Image (spheres, helix red, strand yellow):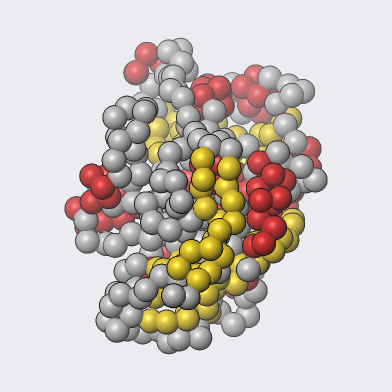
Length: 364
């Protein structure tokens, strides 16, 4: 049996490199030889045991690679072709998918089993590195490949498209969910990779004033290149007070929460005008609370939208077209490169946010 190297979840606090069989290819599948993948903040939640997955599962959900083998029923692709696939990788057959939200592929909620939180593990349609083996390996099996693979334009490098499977798609969805109109003021909380993509997305959607919030000056500096007009260091000012000053007391039209902390969620609520929209992207590990006054006791016409990154080949094609047309460049977010053999050290760097790390390119 042919084997491959893969990063697997062993137990809370331990993700290790192990040997696993190269997956068998079914009729609707594609076997992708990974050329570049990366580590996501959600993977760190898995590492810490804050998000439960099966022991022995290959982690990771951001694949860039080459088609090694195609299933007999997969049309429109060829072996040897460079492709990406979205992190969610929905099958498009569920009620949720046919209702317009394929990222909430409800057929997988039943399969996901129980967890300690509220009885069931909230997976939505997220499969790679969650319900099935993921991408931090030499190979990954892409199910429902015809709907999930997107060819990479020859002009784009692995690093340029590495954000598309998750980070860029998620950040842009946060901006889309913020109901941004031309001339709006938008506050983006946290300028990690997803927040930086949300900032860029807000600019593309027509916001005229984008306020980026973080406690890391280096990330705030990068946010200006992504479209931020104002940067606020939350360690040096009262963010809510500053936003109200900047808006003449009106409040922001929308806010995007990209960190996943209850305290940040509350601030994102407090900066809104009446009728404003809070777009939530964070993965929360404890309950969030809505501040009564900021919510106007439920009478303020506020909207709260949540999101899981959209998947599918059309979404990915659109994202890559943004990069190919030079509307945005996220290649600069790749700050470090590691071999797959050294992925344990890469996790240590990323989990502890050392050395100015934003994203790590992992190459088998």
